[in-house]
Length: 406
Image 1 (cartoon, rainbow, N blue to C red):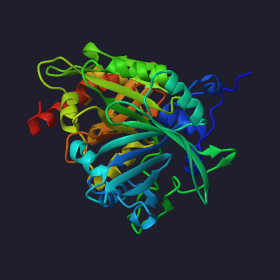
Image 2 (tube, helix red, strand yellow):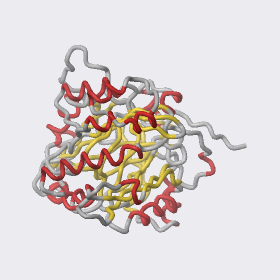
Image 3 (spheres, helix red, strand yellow):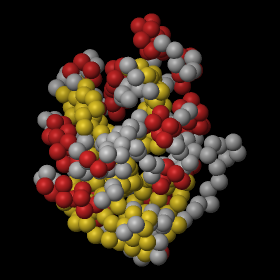
Image 4 (cartoon, one colour):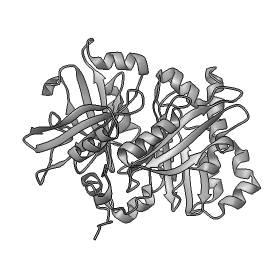
């Protein structure tokens, strides 16, 4: 008989999350891992290449409430770049910055700016996944291999996906022994002297909900098929035509998800319209396909947004008319907080047949108008805020127009 129960990952256990919380936070579902040709346990780490990893690591601690837990660099034998490992709930970010002028990260950053280079996934069996990926025609960047240190062994491999983005596959239990180090062999445990101000919450977000990938015109279906064919992901949703269109710009989006729904990838491409969409702007400034935004799940979006604003994080503005629209209020119905509270913070709300969600989007986090974050609080809804698309993209267009890129 198949076992469809989903177990907590080590990161989730360490974050003291439970299955009920995860089902609310990210829409986690039970599924049969044994029947999956490419079983994915969940996110392992999101790896960023940035211009200054030392300062970026401080930013994620001071503004985003993350905790520094690991480090690798010249002091640990990694001579060409520094890597800082940060945690919040079950999310792990790794930020890398070049130390030497001949580091490959210099070339990557010159072309793309700050951005996600690796969406690393935890899997129970690297060899099984790579065998399936090769059979399905994926490009294998790294063959399965073990790396180890005093804390145990990790088995790893990597496959290519859109642009220069990769999926490193990480198996953290090898021959029945779980790796117990800070992150990966080669990294050391590291804490920070940064002290949160009095009254700051333990963390501002608990889990990663989804990562959006932007690809070129005509390539969305190709990558949707890649995730279905290679990794056994399933279609969750698709948004085309008037779903994601304003007076000036349009885009198309389809969503694929792993069997347990821990890992969800909306994939966007531009659509022909009067002016240039946010996807066109991203592709221009990132110089190709890449990860556009990360959705961070929280159980209290009001507190999270208030704390982030206090630390200087900027969000897209939502016009008052959005909240005053009687049709919108009728469609949304009752939510856990008064609409006036959402209006005061610019938080969007959407409802579908399963429930509702609250969401808000930051402005771009770096100098280029590329990567940004979404904060999301789910209450039953498994969607992505379809009812908010028009208001959201009009808000993005206003920012594009200020930059002269619309």
